[in-house]
Length: 429
Image 1 (spheres, one colour):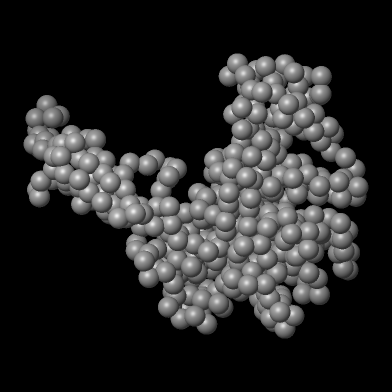
Image 2 (cartoon, rainbow, N blue to C red):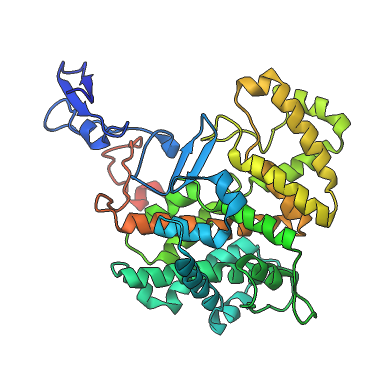
């Protein structure tokens, strides 16, 4: 067999031919390798799924060695420059860029569903004033499943579409209200005259003015950030959405799992860590000492390196350009100078180059979010709003994939076996 792997089990001397397809082998082929009929077959041990494919997907392509990111085959650089977030959302969900009529219908659907039930508002108002916005968002997204019980009928294509539209439409409303809750400010209802991203900014920052109009450069910059975060292959939160979704639960519950995964500091909170690092460095003069501290293991270099990218994260280059537009409106964040100098030194230092530690998407995004006056606890909420179309496109792919089964990884048991129960009268004597 040409496209196959020949495996010899040295325990038995038996040889097995394992087919190779699309550069992968099926794990269940190794399950056929066993010492005898009574023993279990071989399992693959892969903590963190660093080299295990759990699905076939046509949504996002990444080549980490070359720094390539594509949505449905379109380079992220082209989408960030020429498209907008709603069009990219359509692309991710439907697989193709929309015609004029398709886009207008899609935009109308999303705009029409930005309002949420008043009971959701009451639910969100029940959280303490100091509740983390991400915790509120996670709970609120899950709660939507109770407002749309028909969402459990995931076999119906029209019904799936309706829930997808609702979720993309309502995420900015829920995110903005989570922010207003933390600020102790009244909730602002959607303004359907505004674009998707402009409407979000209005719900965040509108006070007494009759109509809130954000600077178009800020609207564009945030729209670009949403595009860059829209999907990123099988990351932690997407894996959570797919894993929970494999039980055939409604999409709101599956996406709530994605929000929960994004809540973790190793996934969604990295840009906040970058800001803390830059503040601790304090000035350009302190960078050489900080670099030495990193090499000696005394300091952590945040915002550099990536599990997938072994080259410059293509999203980081786009965000770096977006910084200019934002700071033109807001004034330059004093941390930017430190960030640029730190990047320059790190990219010229063999220690970092040899380890392929290049800036990732988190290195500059936090600077933009801070310039837009978002507190650090809102950073992951913004990430979640941008990632929603990606989660939903992955969920949609999952529920239509006949090869998918309910997620149920194997384990390697390491505990005790065959113990006899000791009665309490003996254990407590």
